Image (cartoon, rainbow, N blue to C red; front, side, top):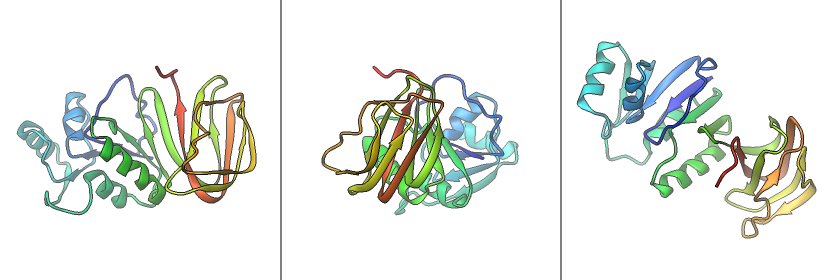
Length: 202
């Protein structure tokens, strides 16, 4: 598993035992430095990294992949590209830039083996079929992303579906509930984004 640390908000404890590689994306390096965790690689344009952190990265022999500030990709996209074929989890993805978060949701359509994770929430994307871990009572939302999703089946939830259509302009998949330790999401045409609330949201 590749663990990617972005330049966003952090809170709570994170399980890093699953991380085979640690990647700092631009300002995410500041967070890693505060925790004394030297990444394996730094990726970004360095516009949100302190000078002290840059020096710390160099002193720890971190591989540096620097890019120009004016480019067509956001820094996190560059990191996802670097590890395109590998399973990835992104931390520190939340922040005030809702446009960045929306862009990241669309990147999940391209990098399907990626999840976004925070203290309270796991977000991922499904085309085809996925069986996912859950806890009974957890709140889940499943929504079409980008276009209508068809042939949608949900099991392991309070509200199940079988071969249903989920129009992108009718988001009725908000606020479902897991009723088992595993849930199954299947989509025949298009794709859906899921939100698994590990803690009850406000």
